[in-house]
Length: 380
Ligand code: CAA
Image (cartoon, rainbow, N blue to C red):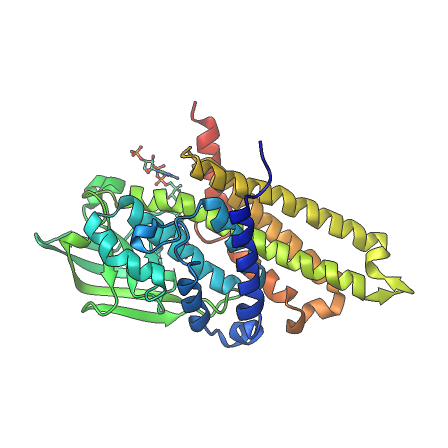
C-alpha cells in the first residue's frame, strides 16, 4: 500500500491550487452574492484541461487518472464550489459517460468541444416528480423511426444555461420500467428546447441551476447513447463516478474551511493568547483535521478502485456519504472558530457552510447513498 502521490499527481494538485488562488478567489464573494456563473474562469479551466482530465488525449482530454481528478476537484472546491460543480458534471457525468458508452461518431463529434472549454455539458436526470426515484420519469422520448420526439421538464440542472450539450434521460417505453429509458444528446438551439427559470439557491450560488423544458423536440436517432433501453443503466453507471467527484468537492469544501479556521485561530487573540492555544479551539481543530483525513482516504480509495478497474459503486457512495457529512460538520465548526467574523461574508466560511449542504443532496441524497451501500453489503 502506497499513500504517496506520484510527481505527476502532486503537480496536478499544485497547478489546481495555484489556479484556484490566482483566478477563482478574486470575486468569489461577489459571484455568490450576485448568483453569477464564473463563465470566464470555467472557460480557462477548459483550456487548461481541468474540464476533461480523464478523457483520452485522442479526443482532446488529459488522459489522467481519477486520483489526479479528485486532487484537482479538492483544490478548486476549497475556493469555489460553484466552479467545481461545473467541472465535476463535465468530467464525471458528461465526458466520462460519452467516452464510456457513446459511439465513435458521438465521441468524435462532442468530446473535443467538451474538452477544450468551447462547450460545457449538462446531465439531465432529475424532474419535478422524480428526484431520488429515478425510474419514475415523466419526460418521454417517443420513437418515431429516424428520431425521438422529446417532451417533458427537467429541473435542478447544473450548467443549465451555460451548457450547450445536454445528456437527457427520458422514458421511451413505460411498460418496460427501467429498461424502457434512453439517454439522448440534445444540443442547445434544437427547436422546442427552452432553458427555463434559474434557481435562487442557498449555496453554490455561482453555479447556474435551471429548469429545462422540451416540447416536441426532434432528436435524431444517432443521438441516443448506447442500445435502446440503456438510459437508466447509463445514468446509474455515470453517477457511480459522479459521486467520487462530488465526494472530492465535499472534501475540498471541508478542507478549505479548515485551512481558514486554522489560520484564523493562530492570528486571533483572546485572553492574552492566540485562540489556537485555548484547548476548546485546539480540540475543535483536531476533530476537524481527523474527519477530513478520514474522508480523504475514502475519496482516494474510491478513485483508486476506479483506476484499478474494480467495482467502485459501493466505495463511491461511502465516500460521498461520509465526505458530505464531514463537509457539513467541519464548515459549521469553522464558522464557530471564527465567532462573529464567521457569520459575515468577508471571511468565506459562511459561504463554504452554505455550499456544503448541497453535497448531501445532489447526485443522490445521503439516504440514496445508504440504499446503494446497504444493497451492496447485503447482496450475498
Ligand atoms: N450502478 C450500476 N448499476 C446500477 C446501480 C449502480 N449504482 N444502481 C442500480 N443499477 C442497475 C441495477 O443493477 C438494475 O439492473 P438489472 O435490472 O439489470 O439488475 C437496474 O439498474 C435497476 O436497479 P434498481 O432496481 O436497484 O433501481 P431502483 O429503481 O431501485 O433505483 C436507486 C436505485 C439507487 C435509488 C437510483 O434510483 C438512484 O441512484 N437514485 C438517485 C438518483 C440521483 O442520484 N440523481 C442525481 C441527479 S444528477 C445530479 O445531481 C447532477 C448534478 O446536478 C450535480
